Image: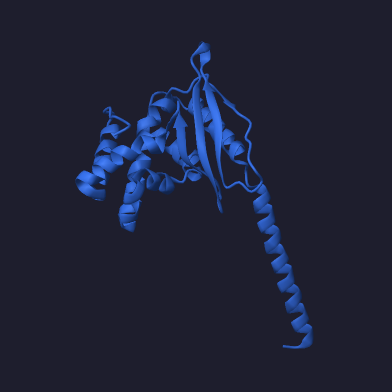
Amino acid sequence: MTLKKMKIFKNWIVFLMAFCMLGLSVAANAMEAPDTLVKRISKEVMDAAKANKQIKKGDQKQIYVLVENKIFPHVDFQRMTSLAAGRYWRQATPAQKEQLTKEFRDLLVYTYSNAISKVDNQRLEFKPLRMSPNATDVVVYSRIIQPRGGEPIELSYRMEKTDNGWKIYDVNVLGAWLVETYKGTFASEISRSGIDGLIRVLAEKNKQLASGKPANPAK
């Protein structure tokens, strides 16, 4: 390689490195703050639910599509499932972890889809988020204001900062954290019939909920 070509090569390397660093800097600066992210997602879901007649009628498929497109990308379902499974998570195989996460995710969608179908004139209020510049784990506090003077519903989100932005890994409704709600029943089922037994139970509940039959969300 000639001296001239070597110089051109080095210049391109420097340029590409600078470009990559700039891209990383822009990506970091573009990362939404956790409360901003939750506000945006909430608004998009509420607006879509209000506008979609099939969702208002309780169409499970339409609700699932909405949740999959608007909410799933911002939720760490694997961490949520691992926390609910507790110490048993370490005993599960990769295949069991994947299937358990899928069934738990689907259970949450089916169980709480009725709430999405009832979105009407509610509005959200958020408490100011106080976090240090280096925080990687925060709680975003909000509440749903009901129309016609109904009792507000307190709603909080535990969120973790990842390489792909802030992710929700637990939700608190009216003082009860979702992970803790399921942790006991998960442990009981695993003690009786193992990880595969819990997967079968969740899969069966999902079938019931998909067919429109009621099921206890905490079991």
